[in-house]
Amino acid sequence: MAVKQPPRTASIVVPRNAAVARSRTPALVGVLLAVAAYAGLCAALWRTSGRGSDAFVMVPQAITDAQAPDWLPAAEVARVNDLASAVQGRSILDPTLADDLAACYAESPWVSHTLHIRRAYPDRLEVALAIRRPIAVVDRASGPPIVLDRAAVRLPASAAPDGLPRLEGVATPPPAIGEPWAGGRAADGLRVLARYGTLADRVEGFERFEARKVLVGEWSRQDARPVVEIRTAAGFPIVWGIDLPGGEASVSEPSAEQKLAMLAEALPRIGGETRKIAYASVRQHSGVVVKFDGGSPVECPAGGSADAGTRRVSRAGGSSPQAAVAWMEPR
Image 1 (cartoon, rainbow, N blue to C red):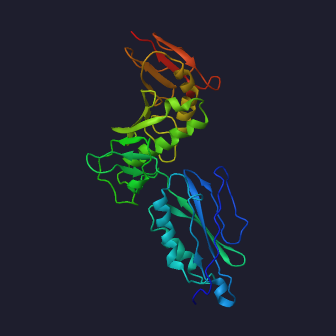
Image 2 (image 1 turned 90 degrees about the horizontal axis):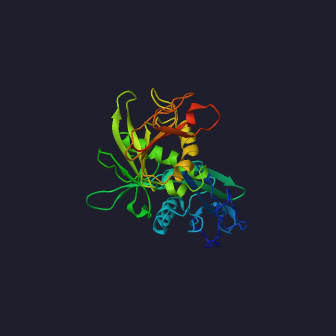
Image 3 (image 1 turned 135 degrees about the horizontal axis):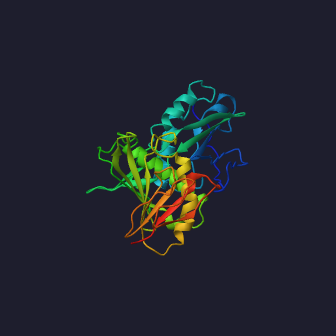
């Protein structure tokens, strides 16, 4: 049935640091939810002020720029909004409305999934969406860079903000927009990048060590995974090694959480070094190994002394071998 009166609209500003923010006006409800590396984007579908069945006819209400996450360009917000127009004129009582609306939003490469579609008594639906966040780019010889989220799903080129890390070593052809990069190498590199980024909350002055590039390199035959390396803003690489999807330890390497714990302990000490570092490695169970230019890499064995020419500078958790750090003196 046709809508008899145009809906009233009201814009709200969602606090950036709020887990859940709600408008007190009946015209629009906005919600911003944090979900892992995603942000929740919420639109409200509401009734007109007419009586009878018109009271439950759905009118998509636009998502404002204030509600959208910072990384979603205004033009893309508009495209997400347009998807909801397919339900215009449908009744809130329609049992297939929620599924159809979720399918509409799924057509956007930005929408990872629908968090919820809820009936808001008496006459509204709240729709919360998980929005993909760009995390890295792959440069090409010609054309715009390929923008990827943490699941290696390709996003529109308009999503490339300045300063995103570069991903290298992915040899398979790029996917279509909205599809994940096949082959697993991109997923491994981006998973390591996402894990490494969590150190920003654990290491003071982490800006010095932010990832500038992620290289998916040689294949580890023992673990049947590629070796991942992080090039830091400080100019030296961190050899992360292989990374399993669940973060568990591999046949030859520590778990992802053990590697993060080692780096959380070691990076502040590395930051105080004046000598040029060739690389750091967290592939070994004995701890972090740091090599200076002119030296050779040395492991710091658990419970024992460092090899000649090295000095142990950090050890977290008492006798725990997972945080030992060995520096190789230049020769």
